[in-house]
Amino acid sequence: MVFASLSRRLAVALAAALVILAALVLAIAPTFSQAGPAATPTPVPGFAPPPANPPPAVTPIGTVHDLAPSVQQQDKWSAVFQFPDGHQEMYLLATNDVSAVRSQLPSGATLVTTIPPRSLVGKEAPRKVTPPAVRVTPPTSGQVPLPGPQPPVPPPTPTPVR
Image 1 (spheres, rainbow, N blue to C red):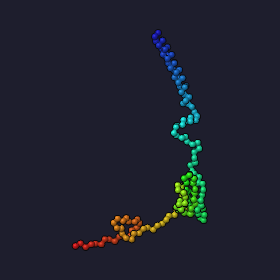
Image 2 (cartoon, one colour; image 1 turned 180 degrees about the horizontal axis):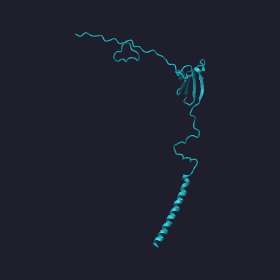
Image 3 (cartoon, rainbow, N blue to C red; image 1 turned 120 degrees about the vertical axis):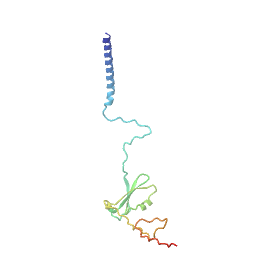
C-alpha cells in the first residue's frame, strides 16, 4: 500500500514536472526560432550612428586650369591640389615641375597627386642625366670622397731614413 501511494505521488510529480518543462520550452522557443531582419541596436550615448548616405570616397575635381595651352593635350602633366575648404583643382602643365603653381596658391593648399601625360603612360619617364663627379685632387683627412669613378691616387713618396 505504501508503495502504491508512493508510486502514484511520484507519477503525479513527474507529470507536473513535465508540464512545467514543456511550458518553459514553449515560452522560450519562439525567441530562438525568429527568422527575419535583426532588431535595430539601441544607440549608445557618445557614439554617433553611421550616416544614412555615406560621403563619396572620391572628391570630384572642381576646376581645371590649363597653364600650357600651346602643348598638345596628350603631352600635358596634371597636378591636383586640395584647398583648406575641401575643394580640389587640377592644373595642366608642360612639365612635372609644380613649384611655379605652388608658389601662386594660397597657404594651406596641398598637392594631392601629379599625373603623367598620356604620351608617357606605359613608358619609362624621362630621367635627368647628370655626369658623374670626378675628383681632381685626392681627398685629405676629414674629406669624404665623392661617389663615382675616382682618378688613381699617386703612391706616397718615400722619405729617406737617417
